[in-house]
Amino acid sequence: MHVHVGDMHNAKTSQVLRISLAVTLAYIVLLVIAGIRAHSLALLSEAGHNLTDFLALLMSWGAVYLQSRPPSARKTFGYNRAGVLAAFVNGLTLVLISFYIWYEAFKRLQSPVKVDAHLMIWVAAAGVVMNGGIALLLMRGHRDLNVRSALLHEIGDTLSTAAVIAGGIAIAMTGQHWIDPALSVGIGVMILWSSIGIIRESLNILLEGTPSGMDLGRIEHAISDVPGVESVHDLHVWCLGSDTYSLSCHVGICDMPASESAIILGGIRDVLGQKFQIHHTTIQFELKVCEVSDGCVIPVSEGHAHEHGHGHSHSH
View (cartoon, one colour):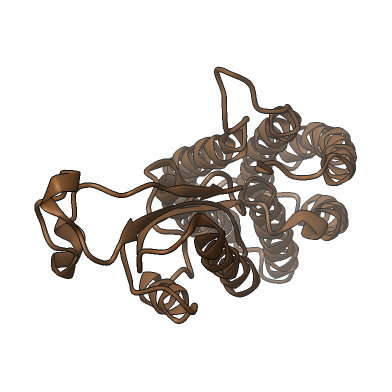
């Protein structure tokens, strides 16, 4: 059974996350100091945003460590969902921080404060470089939902800090200081938008829903097209981790020796692996014709109502 990412991939991802943590923490300190000196809510909002990024990266780093641990008697699938859980928590923190930013922005809109636009511009420019660099590093592991949640944080930061630069220029040219809290509202919207997809996808995995992009109808037809397969029912597909899929189903076949059914099983496994990247499967074979003497009282023709199989096969 292979249900966890490779050790080499985990090591590289862990190193990238450690570097990102150190750089992000340094930038948070810079944002807080500059935000206080410039009286800029946009910079302080960015500090809050980057703090959630720091926590997101920290949880992602911890999740990568947990995912590298092997399965055990108590955790037979290993710790693949540690990363998914981290992504879910990250999404929730983004929602909370966006509402807090809106609260502070509306207060500032009612009582605008003079802002040091030039300091805003230089600090935000440093942020664009930092967040853009981290995002490029994280793109290597974008298939993993856990890493992708951290990547979305960084992409959102890169865009929002770019907006702060534009806002700083606008304030310097017009002297309109309400632009600063208005930018904060926009940053809050961006934060909330980026969190919705991560929350939805991670929650779907935690609830063992059908993975995004997986079409059960296509999978059923692909299995049915394997020579020797007479019917397919009780089909389930779910995620063990963000990019590790699992499948179980009942397959009806004619009465035949086990050596012949093994060929059918191999064909099903090949189709699932090549077309759908599903490599962890549990497939139960059932005879096309049932006999009451074997305890099966419902004909196979009724498909999903079938109650008892006549042996089963597993593939891992």
